[in-house]
Length: 67
Image (cartoon, rainbow, N blue to C red; front, side):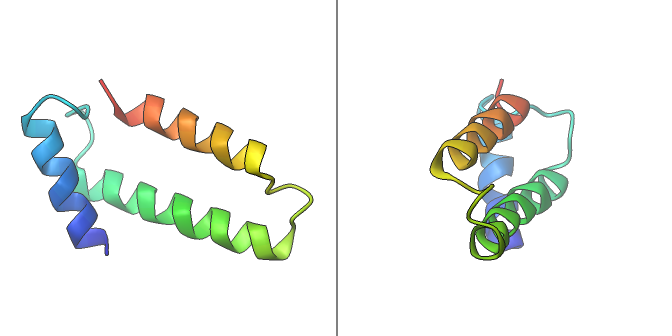
């Protein structure tokens, strides 16, 4: 999964979609960690991992990696 995401990010970096400051494999690990973390938190604590919080986390992450 990480390898595939890194390949997508590399293509996006070449096209100027993603920031180039961070290596694609690091960004791919962040994406994977974020997805797995939200998934785990959802089942452990639905009180905190609401749809609103998940959407806010998603938007913040996208702002961080997009140009």
